[in-house]
Length: 389
Image (cartoon, rainbow, N blue to C red; front, side, top):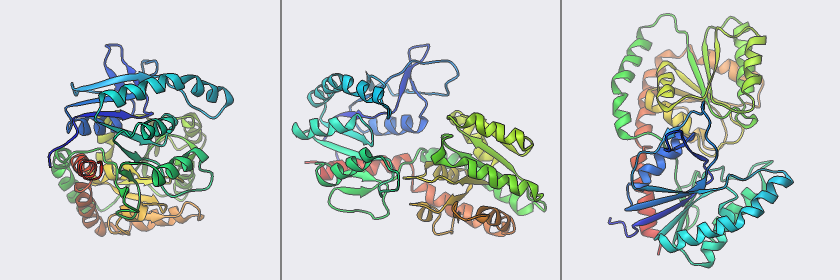
């Protein structure tokens, strides 16, 4: 299919920076990889997004695609009255950006949910711009969800003029809402892991004494629920269970998690590793046997998909798409973070099922092969060329 659109504009709230050398970078390496892959299908792409001040110590990824252009926007947002006033003051800047994108682009890509794309929706709707969107949060309503998120889903479901890609179980909800996941690896990277995965399986089959290595990856915030994992693994440690756990990520709870580990003398078995670069994270995946995620709210877990590429088996809190991702326990395990000791008993039981691991790894790898960046771009390319008039 020939792409009938040549010039793409992207509106996102992903924060970017100019590093000390003047390069555009972001701490969201997945966003960077996805946008560069998508931009490869267009002659020219402009990303409109907030920029903030760069500081040393940030773990960032640099853009390398030359035909990408950036239009910096103010970095505003938050729940306080002060933050809301800042958003109102920023509206004229946003409106100028919308006008520029409408004038200079063939099609607009809006990534929801965020404050920027609420006025953007109305502007492009009024201008009858050609648009498509993704909703990267949890599509099903959940307790405590911000009302603005529900409002954006209502707009997308009822009034958005282009196709919307969302993390849903159905292949299609109506004539505009389509199932679409969010990968971060390429088929080349899948192939790079063939040898490593083969060695991993041979090692698992030959080991007599198995000491499992676990990894959990994500922002260190209450919704990701790493505290639950730490408490459950503390109990396992007290019971004499041998393991290693890496907690990867950054956020407001990092200090509290480190203090928990120190207070309970867990430094030898639990490492609060902080934020890692793309390459550093790949090396940690290669050392790990299981990815464990206890998140309370999750639209689509990119981390388990990354683990599949490396032959790592997921252990997931059974919410939203977790059952689908694990193939209903064919390529991973499920637990309930609401049930006392459910994770503890599952982990101990898993380690007695080592004979199942090779087949689960192969099935996970096969699933990962269907969730590559190339596949994601192809699916999006087909949708916008078919459903955007």
